[in-house]
Structures are given as C-alpha cells and as structure tokens.
Image (tube, rainbow, N blue to C red; front, top):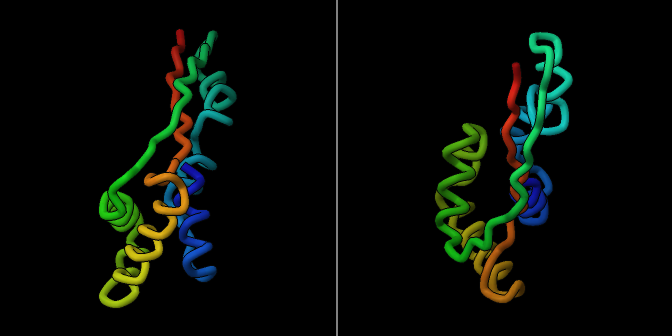
Length: 110
C-alpha cells in the first residue's frame, strides 16, 4: 500500500507513513519465507495480488490516522481539511478513484 506514503509526501513532504513500511521490514511478503525457514522445514508462499479503487477520501483519512499515531496528531483541524481536499483532487484527476496497491499473501509451513 505504498501509495498512502506517496499521497502523504505529495501533500506535505514532511509527512510519512511509517506504519506499513516498518511492519513490512520486520515481516512481510518479501522476507517472511526466510524468517519462517528458521522454524519450519517447508515454507510455501501464495500471493494474492490486487488493489483497491477507493472513492471515499474519508475512508483513506480514517485508515491513515487510525494506523499511525504521528499522523493522528499532525492531520487535524485545518491541515486535515486541506488533506481531504487534496485527496478529492487526486481522485478527480484519476477517473474518480484513488488506486492503492495491496500486496498480501499466505505462508503455509510444516
């Protein structure tokens, strides 16, 4: 969901969405197999590719501030309204939605 960070950076280069990046660095689709191999004989990854076409700016704002305490403190009052307007303009420039890549999957181990 890298687009969340990209949106925040375009809105205000001082903002960052660390939550997803920090979690992916710890354990994610890119490094999960190697971490699990220390504990299991066999590790199989099944990826579920896709994305989200989000049409509701408030849903994006709600998700971002619920998953990152720093954003919750920063995106408030006037700055929050500016961000919602920014998202609305991004949505309009992209055929009425904001596309968010999601990279998820399942590790099966024995």
